[in-house]
Image (cartoon, rainbow, N blue to C red; front, side, top):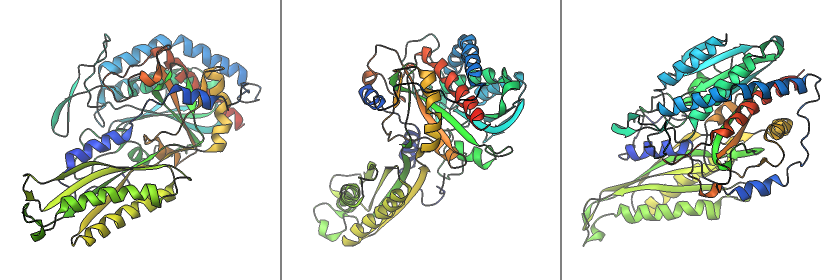
Length: 472
């Protein structure tokens, strides 16, 4: 977190923590038609990823090695799917990962940001350091997919017993990166550089989230503990499986690709009175309702949405306990989604100004708190253009495109503040199924077509090698 949650925690802590969880990785199913239309503006010919003499041979070797390990890749994914663990509780997953990386002969660190694992593969030749990241945590969701390896796991979230499921595809991410590690370790002597394999906990939120705000949060904590240093990372790559595209489809976007997610709390103080005599009190419900409507004018009338889109949503509103009593206070929480840092700061200020001024006009006060959760995922245009031919080659003609901006958020954004980073989507919806009708990520019906996973391995390994070769 970029701000502490330890002060002025509202009465709606449970609802607020849940909204943080949903902020983390809410992927919605964009119509495939959008991706196909966007793909039409992409290069029709697949350009070589690099002109380095060794490139073609190394790329062929990656493809062969990935195919060889495909069944193990699927087996890993099914095992992890059947044993999901929520944020900062990924002990079984971390042990599986660490044992595999050690078997490959890597330097391995465990317990990073509680349960994170980092493996360092030193290539046989000098060169840049490339980081590859996979998130490991699952969600408090009851699985409703009829597969033999369906999760029956239980857990505790916000003090309640819950079912646990890999409803966002992090099981696929871990398996893909484990397979990528094996592919690249087998080519170790030919690699002109080093690779850091970052297996990150708590991308969604810590399972033991508490109002004190002192729990460990995914990417930011890993960075704080030095994952992007010693040796310093020159470039970082990551992917996310998505139901928005058919299996094996690869989509990316230069510039802002996923939104920043922030959360706000507003407490409106009123004065209790009988509902039949409202003039003897101050009605915080009416004032709070005016604040809700006022917040919408920040986007519709005060922000330059021709620059970038933005969203303000009030998701909870609590106050009162009887129909004929004006309550003492109301509280509300909401989310802000933005793509531009300047717009984000401006909107935060306007939320505070709008709420406090409306409350003042009613003769009362509003207490406002805004917490930054995730920054926008921004793919540097130069790095994206540099690596796009690699993704095009891996996906194959007609199986890639420019993805529309997503209003969902991802803490991969914090790695991008430490080094140039490219984040892309990998389709996992069965071919022949209309992606717009597929169960989205975070759904209890979310389904991964495992035939698409090998494309993730080939993409991450190829991005690594091509980037290294381009730096020679």
